[in-house]
Length: 422
Image (tube, rainbow, N blue to C red; front, side, top):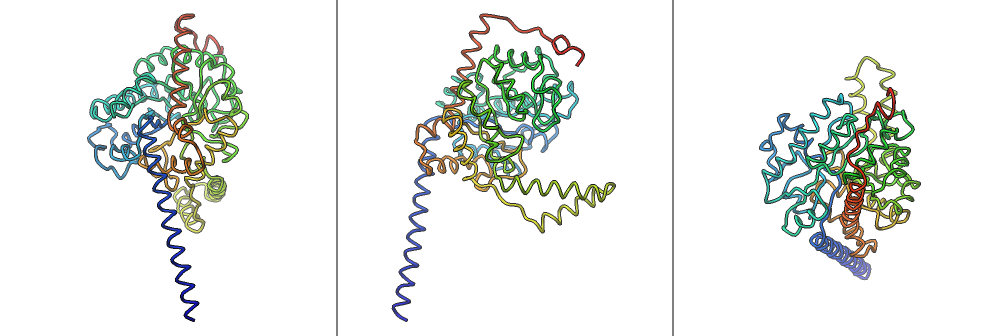
């Protein structure tokens, strides 16, 4: 009996020591991660704080969400941005693609105004970055470089002049579509209408290249991705997308597109959206969607009843959680197919209703960096993923723009002129 107790005690001690060693190893990885975040700017491709603010206060009063202190209803505030080691952020000036186009233009201008007011209100934290060099300067000064990204071509109402004015106001990328097709480009979540880009859509890409605005291919259909890569003379980005081979949803990037990124120089900024990350969550979402469809068919005039029944279904069928390791799986896959030079990060914080376990808000970036280090990524490779790749692509786009501006002036093409009666 005594020997058995001694053996059991030894086994317990060994388990405690192993747990302690594992904890120490993880702490060391996180410390390395944070050190790397201090050496190069960690740049996130997509944060929806400006739209989340609109939801908190329709007047978009920054005082209603003072992010100098903790704001539990948001995923973003300054203390957590600092804890996460963020060096640069593309702030999304998203407006719904269901908005009528003229209204969407006004709403986008209002969202751009939010970003500019953020910068004026908290200048000790945020600094506008209009070029890749601006990012480096802001980072050196200890500020978070702040860039503006438009999420959907509906924001310019099929007008190249409006596109140029958005650039003049600071927009440095435009996602060609959101969830709905534009009159000139197909979206991933909509029924195909154009087979990719129309002639005018191709001109939009050319004009963005001429200006130096990054072409963002998140949300677009594979045909639109294909056409944009064929037309683009500068690197493209995917501001918040992951690998379709890992999580088979239309919002992710197929291998056929990943294989073309080395030639283009583009970057896929891996998202933290559970439904784009975890195969198990994808399968669960499909089951949930099928159940909702069934309930809607059986109770066509009782939306409240459908909602109550769905709540009961979810309670009886709890969903899986996406993990940090699964996000890293997407990084691994893109490295395998496209190469280490074509990966970035695009969390989509404050634009999602569910979060990856371990990546709940903007303070958690070191957890992902630590996971990459644990998998054997070198310090130099990690630096590329967290920021240097997108800076390299942006600088290349700036060089292309300088050359193109010597060759031609602003395009005066119109949707009607290139696409006829559409």
